[in-house]
Amino acid sequence: MNPFELHIPTQLFFGKEKADAFFEHLPAYGSKALVVIGGGSIKKMGYLNQVEEHLEKNGIEPVLFEGIEANPHSKTINKAAEMGKKESVDFVLALGGGSVMDASKAIAGLIHDDLDDIWPYTVGGPKYREMKGALPVVCIPTTAATASEVTAHAVISNPEVKGKSPVSYPFMKPSASWLNPAFHTSLPKTTTRDGASDILSHVFENYLLGGNESDLADRYSEGVMETVLDTLPKLELDPEKEHLRGQLLWASTMALNGMQIAGRKAAPFTLHNLEHALSGQNPDLAHGRGLAILYPAYFRWLHKNDRAIDRMALLSKRLFGISGEDQTENALSFITHFEGWLKQNHLYERLSDQDIFPEEFGDVADYAIKIYGGGKDQLSAAGPLTRDNIIEIFEMTEQQKPEPEMA
Ligand code: NZQ
Ligand code: ZN
Image: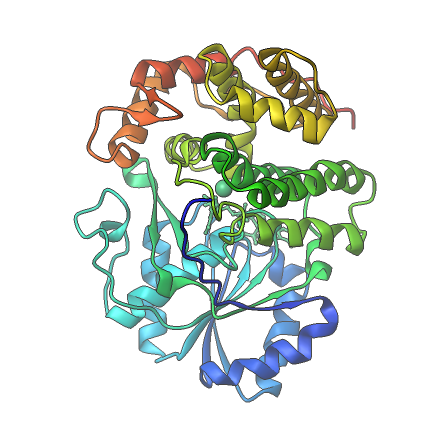
């Protein structure tokens, strides 16, 4: 086992039955909340009304900011912070997916430090690591995807410079989160699929590149993976089943809370580095979709270059029950079986299907290296990952012709 520190400060409430307990807990953070939502679905479904009623019942005045985009824009975040400062709110309540939760953490930081613009504070910016604190943030996640309801991260987009980059501070970890699967039954199929893909990435990244020194981290991560592999096809058939929504939501929260890597060695978040650069290039590309497109090509590239073979072979055995003599063959079996699952769940396609074309691949690779290369001219994935390697992976995705989906 490798040494580690783990701090999971978020008080979690799971289930619609926990509404009263969650809202009765909130006066601990103050009496005026900036309630942050996205582009409209939350209001349309009546979730906002329910939340505002609960807040008022508990003596908390809600101040609404609506209009956070998917892949949240720095300018919108700045506007929300301005409103929060003017209204002297005590804390920020995020009601939405990862984009709304991330935006809320950034807003809470801007208000606390009395700042106007979040972009210079993101990775690669001139003021990276200079934020001092944040107002308390509480979350009600309405997607099963990012685990932002427990993480220290906020990923910010800036379409003006085709940029997407995180801020990350321990003080941005949410104080409390209410996981209510009943708010998930309205999720469209595509958003559900993209979210499932993101959950998997959070356990794949370190599993593949972080070594084999924690048996429990392996078993824990496999548990998350199996839950997702099993639940998504069932949700395709029964999208309003709260029980299934709950399974995916809990898998999501558990996939990026630190437990999934504890005891392994630190490893780069390579798929995320590449995906954030892709969503920077096309701000309409959902994070989980970008990851799904990368998986087959990235895994095949690792395999071709004899990297992470033992780890992919172990996944082949643990997830798909395949354990032949030849580890290289076993690793390939993992890739083909997982690819089959992606196809079955309509997560198999090309970058050009998401309007990112080969002539842009070089620019995206350059951006990924600039932001995530740590000053070097390459990324890493169990060895160097050069600009040419990244372009090769992007080009490999173009072989992934999707099957048309039946209506
Ligand atoms: O804007 P509205 O109208 O609310 O629609 C949203 C949005 O268009 C819709 N939606 C959300 N909940 C819904 C719903 N529609 C119907 N019913 C509901 N219950 O879903 C769309 C996508 O929402 P979004 O929040 O963008 O998706 P997701 O949760 O996947 O978040 C993605 C963002 O999180 C970042 C990603 O990079 C991306 O910017 N990440 C954050 C992480 C973190 N904080 O730790 C880690 C992740 O790896 C990820 O990078
Ligand atoms: Zn992710």
